[in-house]
Length: 118
Image (cartoon, rainbow, N blue to C red; front, side, top):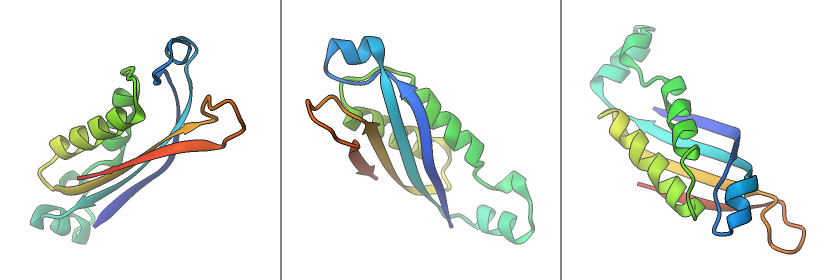
């Protein structure tokens, strides 16, 4: 089973420039979380939320990790992956994309993204 979190938009203070850490900017996070265990399969079959990985918990992990200022979005993405994997033994794989919207490149650019998968 795969849980997809799509287009989580947040304001955060990530970047290697001091101004990015002061002013902050807009970010987007997407995550693909693979869940595999007999308990989660049984919970899905029985329509029982108690045995499933709660996607609200996963969104909270994204928000918590995005609130910690970092120099690079690579570091942020890695922390999100690690925190999600630590959240439940049923989580077997996590793929996270962190996008910085309108990055300070000196030109017009929609976003720059980093993908981490473990």
